[in-house]
Image (tube, rainbow, N blue to C red; front, side, top):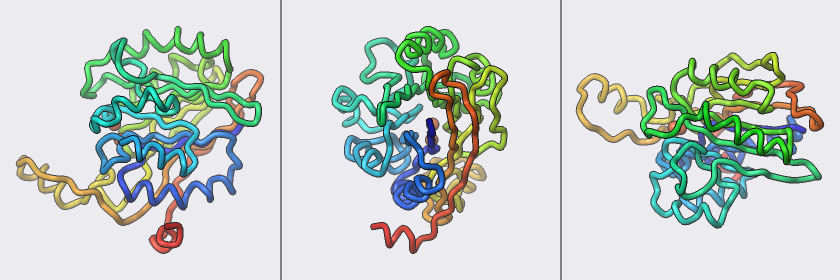
Amino acid sequence: MKVIFLGDVVGEPGRDTLRVAIPRLKDLYAPDFIIINGENAAGGHGITPRLAIDLMRSGADAVTLGDHTWDQKEIFGFFSQEPRLVRPMNYPPGTPGSGFVIVQGNGKKLAVVNALGRTFMGPDVDNPFLLIKPLLEGLRRETPCILVDFHGEATSEKIAFGRHIDGQASIVVGTHTHVQTADEAILPGGTAYLTDAGFTGAHDSVIGREVAPVIQKFVTLLPSKFPLATAGLQADGLFAELDEATGRALRIERFQIKVAPDAVAAAK
Ligand SMILES: [Fe+2]
Ligand SMILES: [Fe+2]
């Protein structure tokens, strides 16, 4: 089974980048499934039902989220209609939506899980290290092929989480920092691991935002707006190939696909 994962899609520049990058990724890797982190799809803040549908039309088989899950209120009621929109599994019981989904196609099944880290993060969520193992045990009764998007700030927490479930998940990929790390590996138990996938959007920026206002904020400490950047479009992510019988990773490769503005204009 071949799986593509794309890091946080940031606003309209990110969505424009996707429309060009996905056909290229399909040519390059012939993926069975494409999973996309959409927590910043709506101008950097969360996702709306329309944008979730848009990402799925662009090619996402499932969309994962993160600490920005609840930024757009209209998304609350949408989870019950769209199980392929997956929020972190460690919000309190009773929270709208689910922390996992099983997607299917061509006789193949991939479970997709989203979890939120707790180190240097906002929401006071339940301990993902405690909750993940029983969830994975249940999912493995359906399929051994499981992707976990671990959305967190601290590299140590993310690496520890990957090691914690090495051999129980097929892919553990980090999101949230928007900066791709160069530590892709197949861990000893057979899990394809990358600390952070990076982000999809305008990279001539500070993690997707215009440079000058962010510097100004650090200099003055005054409240300010951070408009989305528009230049340097790039889609960051990883490709992994899995043994369908065991769920073990056979191959992992990270990518950064640069997209020219004229290619975006042609795709519209
Ligand atoms: Fe993000
Ligand atoms: Fe985030």
